[in-house]
Length: 131
Image 1 (cartoon, rainbow, N blue to C red):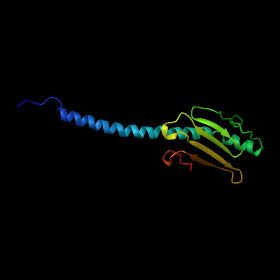
Image 2: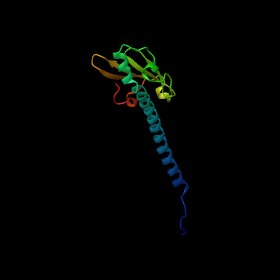
Image 3: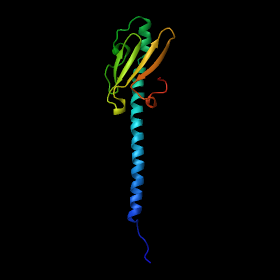
Image 4: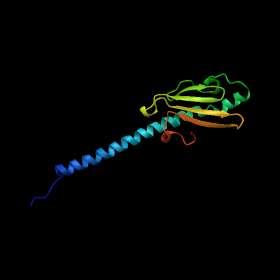
């Protein structure tokens, strides 16, 4: 009997199939990770304007400009708009699962609190503080 050196064709095919299955699962999970990180980045971008928004709102000085509260109107993640009660980010440069996604921070001066809402974003991709 000769000693076997290396793998048979069937053993090699099994190894390749297992690697293919693992790669397909990893790829899907990576796409979810990318989408979730895009939403969190957008939320973080508009969250930085909350203090200035409240200060200007209390002074009656909201002029519907992102620049008035220290935000850029257009960034890699957001197209930002501001009105008298909210800061809105329309997601930009997104994976296909987030096309048309919007993150909105709504300020209630009566309750003195912020509420985060989203639209066109599946529940699994939303930040924990957004409904």
